[in-house]
Image (cartoon, rainbow, N blue to C red):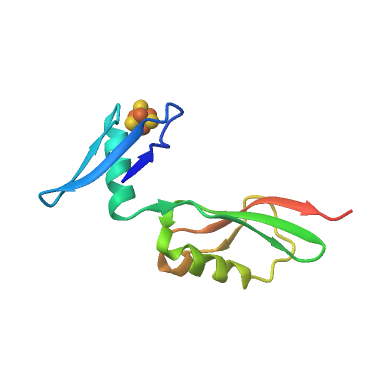
Length: 113
Ligand code: SF4
């Protein structure tokens, strides 16, 4: 597979392949790119950002760290269950989301005018 390393603005183009049972990364300019490429191949993760609209307030939220891509839809469903009220920027609204070891935090509060 091919992808772009997102660990820094340079954006090296990575080629990732499995050879003799070993994941090999080429195109990276530093060890971070190799580590990123291996993770992308074996267990890709993403930080989840989303929003919840209560009718009067829109909260934007994000996970405090990346979670497995395969868990993103379950995580969104869990977040959409929230009944948010009177939260402020930086408040944690879910601790240890789906036992994934990350919290969900408020990153923005947009009030209707
Ligand atoms: S491989 Fe290294 S230099 Fe290249 S984009 Fe990733 S972090 Fe930046």
